Image (tube, rainbow, N blue to C red; front, side, top):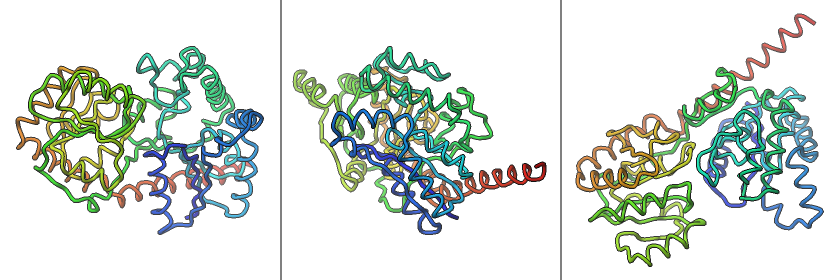
Length: 401
């Protein structure tokens, strides 16, 4: 199969970029893959005029149109596999691919274009005001980078995406969870166009450490939506366990100052960890906590924790509430409720046998349900389905022409 894989890399390398590179390498083992990418680092060196042009091309990019026409003409892909298109690739990619007759499969890593910042979250909390297409809310609440200018730019881009019919030109959407699928259906995308294909991990490349560990672990971005303050306030209420926080982010200085000012002894910031260090950090933990207060899609750290044999305490919010099996692979608590979280932390800390049992169950689940082999087979099935549907539609049109 000939696959055109499309992705706009972020300035800060994250989980989505990592997934794209892994899939690129995996697909190239068995298929012919052409990779079209742009990188947001290209924006750094632009002068004022260049930034103005880039802003316009965020809505519709002439360069993307020319590049895609050239690639499709040369390689004749069977399907286009699209990840992120913002800001440099732009929604024009959908119009171009559709005009060239290439079926489009879009991975839903976030909630764009249903939301200007893609998160259904802003400075006032969870927000779905723009879901049906009125992006004035995004400007009013400065939803992107807390900026009227950036929010207006992305509101215009999302408006163009939907009003130009680009959304309807996508043949299939791949959601990572049933939760995300429900949101896209609520926004009006036909159910038959939406497929669920979870993230995956090669658990056999990670050594489990069921029943080991002497601290509670958090790995992730140190930002408000991740629920770090709820976790910190929960730890202030418990005696015994120590929390180690791995990661960096905008709340790092405030968290460090709070811990120091309050002389909190059971919380430690360990900073950024490399991939190998992350695995070791998880193996040495009793269990992990994911206190997010926004709609997580399918965080890779959840699979990493399970692969190392660790139970996860997470919020009853978004995909996390669907993914964690209460009492089997972890525990759930009410988002933003530090009292409830403190109770769940104490429960697992005082019941190491339960934590070990859940960790072992989580490891088995990862091995059986979230393997790379099963994930790729699901992806190829989706590709074949949209290719077949496009060919059937073409044959039907020719028979009536």
